Length: 83
Image (cartoon, rainbow, N blue to C red; front, side):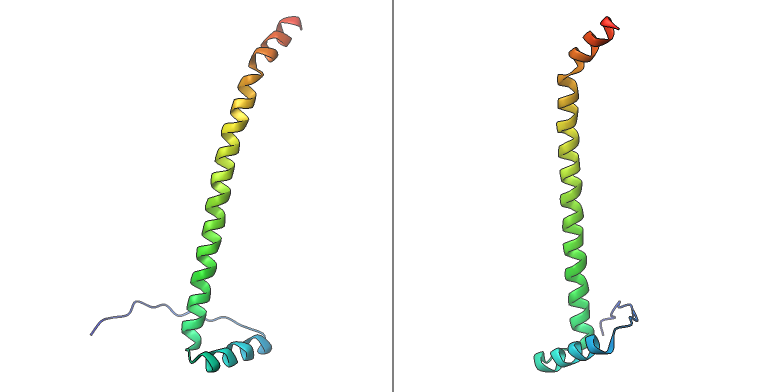
């Protein structure tokens, strides 16, 4: 027999939200835990993708900022000689 490695999480929902979930599960013939697990997996995957995209954007912008700064190194050095 295969052992499942599941954890249990208890969440509180407004009654109206719970009623909608319950109705959906009956209509879709799916267990509530299966639906919630899928929803959370999707949420975490989307959130991680957004965070990865933001990290990539910040990294790219950092390189652009370094290029911009290096373009003005000469001007800054020249300005310091006149001070």
